[in-house]
Image (cartoon, rainbow, N blue to C red; front, side):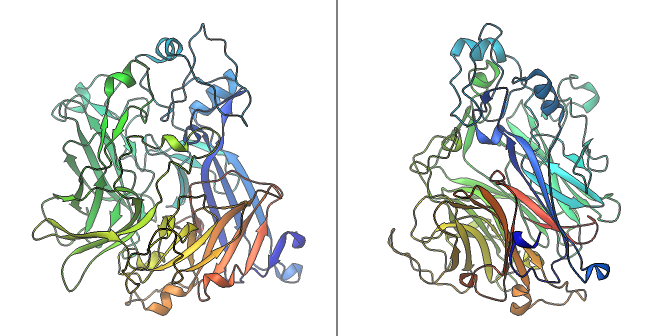
Length: 547
């Protein structure tokens, strides 16, 4: 209704925004051990066209639905945990009659005996479908990086079922594990031999293909088998596909960086204690040991559709922990690969995302998240530079992205959800715009506010979600985009007002400074959970923009 809108929604902002994230935080009265084990809740906000029959009024419609995976339905019917989760949520043993204190309380610890008796030898992890939602090829898909995507009805958000990405993925009942890459699939035990699909594919701005990868763990040499595939937006058909091995990789990377000819995967320094997982002592994530001081490897592969083919190679990079890439490109002058990502600096931490568990994150032990710039020389296969991105000193920021037409180009601006500009680790409460190509490179002392950053802060007790960049106009001629084109877009973000217990969609016009504030706010009737990733589509889900 009109009283739920502040400001003016731009007339050319037409389409549907989808968001996905953890939404069902437990079973019965027991809360999940970690928020990332929660079942996915997909939201949609439809920005309707002007209706001549209603005096050119526009309709804005909000919907939400849980992704009804097999695990969701089984635990709903049992009113208890049935599956093991990635981050430690698991069924209790038959003799453990402990009850929870409700979904708004910290989860109760599970005794050692109950963990082992209830979960030993149970290796099938629940697909929560809670990480990303994309629109492509006429389909809307909820993604989870350790399982198959789930197809949703684009309008009602009802769950249609698992989707095998145009026939490129195997049976979801088979674990994404292979005893050996040399054993043909038909000779793998029935329990294993499957594959999982990443939650972070990307759309190439040059050919419009969806570029993603599926993976399976190879037991005999602790390697990862990855298959890169590019899909066509008309019918979701596979355009091209290639398969490679990553030696010594015990965990599938969370995100990838796409350039015109390359795919880069940055493998963080993590090792798996398989015994603690198999015996039920710990969940998969807690069985990982992180070495925050060890160098990491960046693996570079040719895209399946690359014109310039090359042999895959890896580059050793100084210690850091990468989370999400904003963009990358092949420098036309130097030939170097340049990429930008969010991540943590070297640290002595051994814990992998444990501080994000419980009822609320423990920011006092979470490192500040920075935006980094990485430069690699493909000829020497060496790291040329790894440092905080220009213009990003003391920006504690996450979920970086650029105008989608610039995702394989040297974008001038990176946008991100911001926590502060003083280098501290705090909750996200605004948005920042970073000049990563021509910004200042000097480091500011921790605690000093970076006045060069264009930012907007909603205030205390507001919590901002990942931004989406929605272009105002498409460059249909395929010409070289300009700095002006990069600003011809809107930034959309879901924000929660914890005092009023309501959420709203904030709309920024990127031809203005962020500091001027949103041009519109679309309020929901209540608050929605803090989400992860999403997309915006304006062409009947044939394709969408996302990060």
